[in-house]
Picture 1 (cartoon, rainbow, N blue to C red):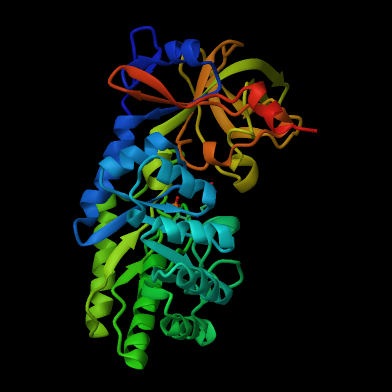
Picture 2 (picture 1 turned 60 degrees about the vertical axis):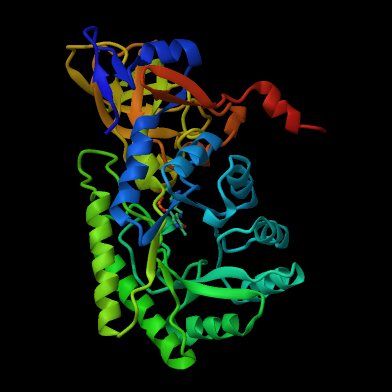
Length: 427
Ligand code: LLP
């Protein structure tokens, strides 16, 4: 867990540093990331899966060069899904053979760059891409290791926009109607490709393991069909990411070792009954590693009580640093962190500074009734999909990411400046 504490004055400290000091030095809003917690979670996943499996951190959750170095040091691999993420990974020294390249519409330039760099695998997402990657690899005189991403037809119980294994969506090749089998047939015929496995990612923020169980069953079924038709046993399966974290006290996430045990058992059992060698398993957790490791620190600007309704608390950021509440109805909690308070609590809605009424950070929460401008409040569990989905809406500047560890703080992604904004505006 994050090393969060309150000192004698009621000021919250993280990684040994008071949030008031962080606000003074780095300003607000800011994402504050606990490096020790990040490393501990990465290590827990690595240890849980052991030497016979691979853990690919999903860079889309949050990626920076410091994070890439921590992952490298902790023995994790990396999943990237754009040229930008690939560039970040390579520039921080992640060995290319530990990188997986994803995406449903990788450009020819991105593919070429990935092949040239020697990425460990490209995850193929469509029939066109099978041919595209094969041609590019061949033209470079390479044989690219690839997996094929399939959709197994599982409805994961999560928000519609982040569920990905039901059939009516853009990712992967459906298992249904023999399409995945046909994709395998084509990939096996192409000299530029070395087909090493099948990939399935069923969604995100999932707590129920039964979706993974069905997915594993169906992926192994395909491996068996491939063995029967082609006489080859593909050596790898990737079950994707998607494990949920606690945003509020209602959520009850599983530990990495429980997840590893469950997934390994399912795959082993399914393979035994299909008389297949158990393939090497890989997983791609993003949120479960980085999500809980950071909070967003905001300063309260205005407190507006609306008689009989609730109190609106405006902070100095909003939907530009956390779009998840507006986009997915995501739930967050919030706490006063710059002082203690005995005041009775009041029902608040924490909102941002954007010109839009949907600019909500925390829909319903309780904060002390004496909350006032200048107070610092923190929204926990904003490590995943907040900085990485941040925007410049209303030309608001994106906050920095400040990493804390052992009483030391350092900026790993600096705050955007007006100069940064204007640099792109060349008209
Ligand atoms: N692997 C693949 C192929 C993925 O598409 C994703 C997430 C992951 C792994 C990592 O999933 P995680 O372990 O982080 O759940 N922006 C949304 C989440 C989108 C997830 C997209 N793909 C959110 O803020 O909830």
